[in-house]
Length: 422
Image (cartoon, rainbow, N blue to C red; front, side):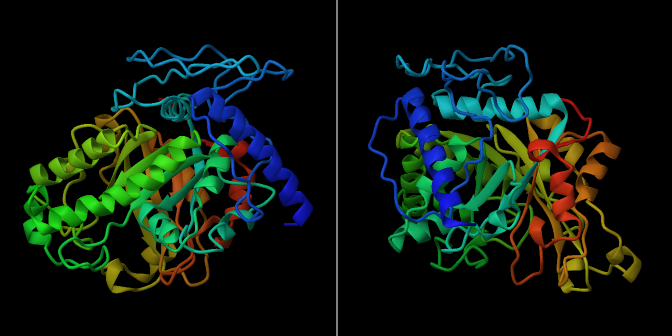
């Protein structure tokens, strides 16, 4: 992107963020840096809780219905107001599970509800936020862009520990209408290893014991995550968080747990966030698709309080031990396995494909339009479909896939009609 274009777009996004901060009561000094790589501000409708009376048309949310918003089951606190930017209270169809959810979280919930009511699925793209070139999967799609951007909280913390704070860039995108969602590949609190280190998987109950060393390490890691989420809260940005995801499988240290222990751990994360005063969050449960007996039934681990449920489902493209005994014909066919998804949809107010796409695809010959075709055929709703970034397991991001750009271009504002209205 040309430097002048980045500079002007970032200025526009910074103005949008400033207006959002007034509405959410987050009064602080904006520190505008000269690093323009993460700027995304091309005029998308704002999802924040403000409307500017100087505009000739009312502010709206991507995918918003041109009618009064549906009633909420809670009485949200009105946004702060100012003479130049009267507040608009967002009213999701179902209130967030956090009774103290702030204005940004209410507006995020309303956006997801309107997408589902419209029968559209938003195109989402995961980024590697620990990398200095984290926005590469996004700028490769310009002038189009995804409606949802995903990142990992452990990567965001890792970048912050190196002295790089990407929260302003993320907040600018949120102010410009992009929905933010975050997984958490939590470090292993028993060994200090990464999320794939299975040490301690058979004694997760120790994390519920206040005086245990693993519990203290687990709490400290989550506290570091809450610190960066609090920075986003200060800037008026909400995040749909998805901790301890794919717990039904055996690849993460928290995988295949006792259901009651898992639910208690999930509830502890929610309580720690509330105790820290972090209320810009919606809570998501992401289940692994049950394609073989080594994955537990998704509903068996459903937490007690979630705002959205989702399915992580990948389609193998080449022979690999991860892919089981699929034959060549199966591998050649682009498909999306939705086993168990209908049951998840029925169990929560909102649902999405929290991760979806190809696995072990060396050349990207996988057509992402199969996602929306499958949802339409099955008559199932999904607020969004999040594709991963390219990694050692193959090409996965929208810009690297056959038909990826054409699929995105066919979806106005990155919202694909699927006809499954909520």
